[in-house]
Image 1: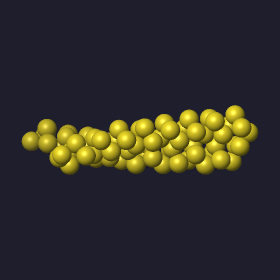
Image 2: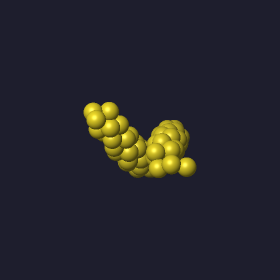
Image 3: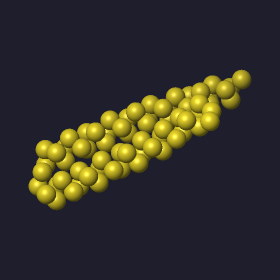
Image 4: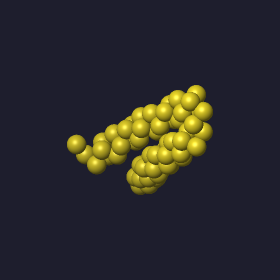
Length: 68
C-alpha cells in the first residue's frame, strides 16, 4: 500500500471515528449527561481537524505537482 493510499484510508477512518463520537454524544444528551456529550463532541472535532490537516496536505501536494 502506498503512502497516499494509507493517508486516504486514514481520512476515511477518521470520518468514521468522528461520526461514532458524535452519535455517542447524542446518546449522552438523551441521558441528560451534557458534560460527557460536550467531551465527546470535542473529541469528534479534534478527529475532524486531524483529518482536515491530512486532506489539506494532500490537496496542496496535488496542486504543487500540477503546476509543474
